[in-house]
Amino acid sequence: MPEFHLFLPQMRMPLETIVDRALAAESAGFTGIALMDHLSPPMAESQPMYDAIVTATWLAAATSTLTLSHLVLCDAFRHPAVLARQAVTLDHASGGRFELGIGWGSVPEEFDTYGVGETAPRVRVARLAETLEVLRRLWTGDPVDFDGEFHQIRGGQQQPPPLGRIPVVIGGAGPKTLRLVAEYADWWNCPVYAQDRFEGLREETGAARSSLQTMLAFVPSGGDRSGIEASASRRFGAMGFQLGDGPELREHFAGLATRGAERIYVWFTDFAAPETLEAFGREVIAPLR
Image 1 (tube, rainbow, N blue to C red):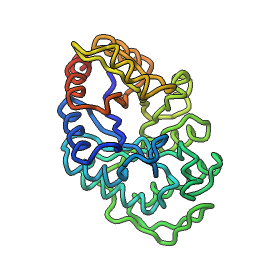
Image 2 (image 1 turned 180 degrees about the horizontal axis):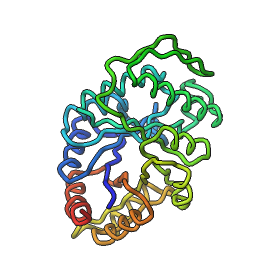
Image 3 (image 1 turned 90 degrees about the horizontal axis):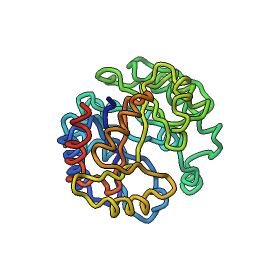
Image 4 (image 1 turned 60 degrees about the horizontal axis):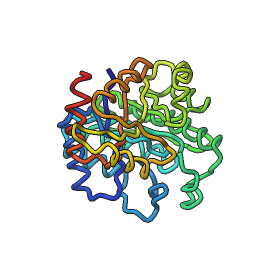
């Protein structure tokens, strides 16, 4: 059966609430938690949101078993030497519980708004390729010389090195991205828009393990099914969502496991209220295990 990670965008709630929901997920049997990475919340630019790396660090201090990651960090927002050091710091702070989720950016408008780089996909994926190679070299702890189109390093060195191997999660479905998955990733995350092609795309991802994201309208025992469905329709809209109670979702996730999904990132319509997480753990995660 797949492992479950909570996807929790760190917006519209104070840090104390984010910590409470991470602890509730940990107690409910979730394996990990993933945050988002944007300069402004997509389609909600005026809403409050916290920084991706700082929030993950805060959660590392508050939790004890959850894997900490992002779906996904945007490559263009950080120089790879900065990202390498941030990742190693989180690796050490969490006792080896950090995974580096990374991609080349899903909201091109951010690039124009904040002037962070080229919007052309071919440029962004080429930059990501260089970043992944720089990270791989810096994480050895040895001095690094690198002369690329986007990054130049002369004798750069990352100390301390990681505690072990920092797993890399790459999200995306294009041919160039999948080649990077096959070369650099421990995990591939298939984006929602490509999940109807999941099995075929998996053949291009090499030895990387596979994950999916699910927008979820979970109906706990005794819950208001019609109200939960209406709320999910308002929130997720055209992105779609999976509606179901415990037995229905157990069947759904078992089917995804049969298709080859080893991890599910769950995005709850109610922003992962603690009582929802507790019920999901009791009615879905525990029985599947």
